[in-house]
Image (tube, rainbow, N blue to C red):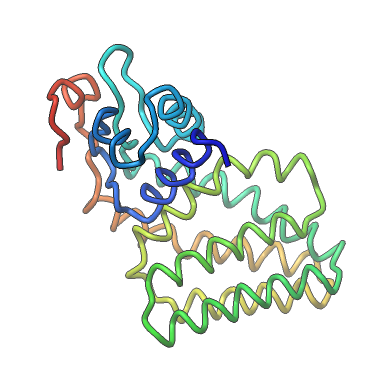
Length: 227
C-alpha cells in the first residue's frame, strides 16, 4: 500500500468512526507527523476524501472534516430511498446463493454486535449490509452511483448508533426474506420502508451533532486544531 493510500484509508476510517468529528480542523503538519507521511501523499489523501464529501478543502488555508448537517442527512435519505429500493428490486430479480450468503453474514455480524452492545460493530455491519444489497443488484452503473455514498452512509450509521438496533435488524431480515423469495415488488417496498423509517430519527439526531453555521475559512484560520 502506498503512503497516500495508507493516509487515505486511515483518515477515512477516523472520520467514518467519528474519531474526527464533523467540522474538526485538519492540520497537515500534525497529521503528517501522526501518520508518519510527507505532506505530498497526505494532500493526495485529503483530495480523495474531499471528492467523497468527507473533507472540505479551503484553498490556501487547509482542510476540515465536512460538516454533516440536517440538510445533508435529508439529501442522503432522498437519494437512498430511490436507489436502495431499485437495488432491492434488482437483487430479488437476480438473486443467487452467494449473494444471499453475504447478506446473511452481514446480518449475523450485526446480531453478534447487538448482543455485545458494540455500537461501532453494529454500524459497520449495517453499512456492509447496504453495500452488499447494491452489489447483489448486479447493476454496475447503480454500484458506481452508490459507491461515493458508502463512507457517508457508514458515518451516518455511526452517528445514529443510538437508534433501535433490534428494529433495524428486523427490517433487514424482512428485506432479506423478500429478496430470497425472489419477490421484486416486496423487496423494493421493504427497502423503501426501511430507509424511510430511519429518516425522522436521524434528522432529529443530526440537530444535536450539526455544525450548520460553520465558516470553513474562519474554521481553518487558526494554526491549532479545533475540537
